Length: 634
Ligand code: BES
Ligand code: ZN
Image 1: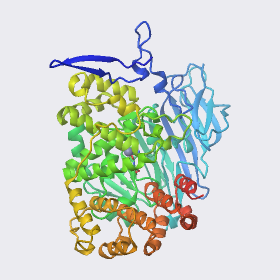
Image 2 (image 1 turned 120 degrees about the horizontal axis):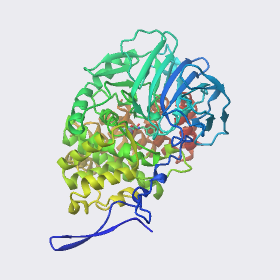
Image 3 (image 1 turned 60 degrees about the vertical axis):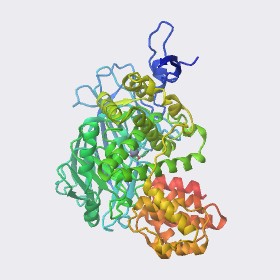
Image 4 (image 1 turned 90 degrees about the horizontal axis):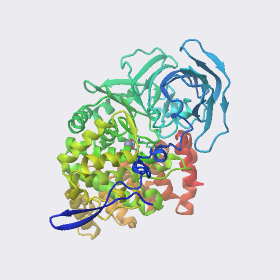
């Protein structure tokens, strides 16, 4: 039987039948004697072998060396247990492709005894379970290990793949379940830990981590880090290379290769403003400093919200700050994600939907409502396009990822559908009320990992129950458990885009030549909308007109170039061929390269080209990006 409660309420003489928004979540299912049953199922992390209910890790001390010649991280992971072990259960850890050299346990933290370990055969997605026996009174477990050169969470770069071309570089990307490929630990977002680390590198390199560090450290080849707040393991991050630092403000700064430092600092100059705007809305920034590491172009994603040190793709350096909503996004995770964390990867939308909503609010506060509107329209358009080709089960916010790689949940659904859901709550309950609700939510769940059911219960108690008439307008259960978008989903509007459409239509009807269109004030978002708005098929002459008038093949802005190259492949516009090859061999961000390969393979000649380009580009791609592209072209 469903736990949905039908509630009839009377408003001004009208009777409304409400379906309680509690949904089917086990969180509030009641047993026959009325006792609330523990939400065991929705809280269980199917992507980890860890057994935190029995033995829980609370601190990691990492001590390792970066062996660039072998592409290996070698060292020890010392795990502090939450309370002394009972001795009944072994400690179960997650590993992937790790070579385990030795395991030891200690009762007092100083004298360690070697114990035998068991490393299971690997599962395709989860890696290998590592069991370490712990006896009664064990407080620490030390694992000596080496990562594999093909570790899924580590990319090693040759000097040729860096801007400076002189020094090698390495960086990690742990989300969703790749921390286990470079550190043996309980790799579940429900297990929050503090960490300390000591990292040895060649002396000419500098290491940085998602933790407290001294930005003025001289290069010593020996670096120390401390993360005093409990974080989920997917936020542990490390990079090392020829990395310089420039301060942007009292608590913000940028790390990147020396030749990119000035450009990055100019682009990211508004970071402190963004922090101030977010604090005003959602309460204090609780992580001390907020620095940004701008990575080499092979970084496989746009950005990663590693605490105190966001990792970002250099493709946001457009020269005009037009792509910094990505920084607003990663900064927003300091509240939604890092402070209040998804307990399992099925709850990923709690991280990304909230963050996309916050991102738009920050953009509005710092750059104005028209810019926010454009980004929101692009967001909904992208979501609709993506969902059109997507299985129904993947269109659900509370997605079922059992038996799958959690990276498969990295689609537009948790982001844009999640953000539209919160936008509807805001528009329905009003901004003041909703802002207060969100601020309270971040306070209430600070430093906790929560499930969708936890959110639903909090929403009911703190927003819906106080205004049942308004609550009736938001189909919460449909948002969370059904594919597609509710009919009442918000439709963001942009006047600026309406003007873009007027211009585009004038050109399409041959009323105005491309060179006479009023595009002078256009920002990146307007260009993206202009190109997206054009019909799929354009004549060669039309392509040439656009290219001549606006120099699109030569454009440096990575997002505009992406859409132009897609258009060019679709319309067999060969003057852009060389640019396409250059683009695909110099950028490794999956969101920008995968759609281009997908468009190429639609024709036999295109597939040939895709294979040829991939062969050249592959050494520069992150292992995950390479695997994804391989799947497309083969
Ligand atoms: N946390 C994500 C990146 C991520 C998600 C990595 C899932 C691995 C698995 C990050 O905050 C993010 O969403 N990045 C976006 C940029 C953003 C502006 C939408 C990206 O990389 O495209
Ligand atoms: Zn995000």
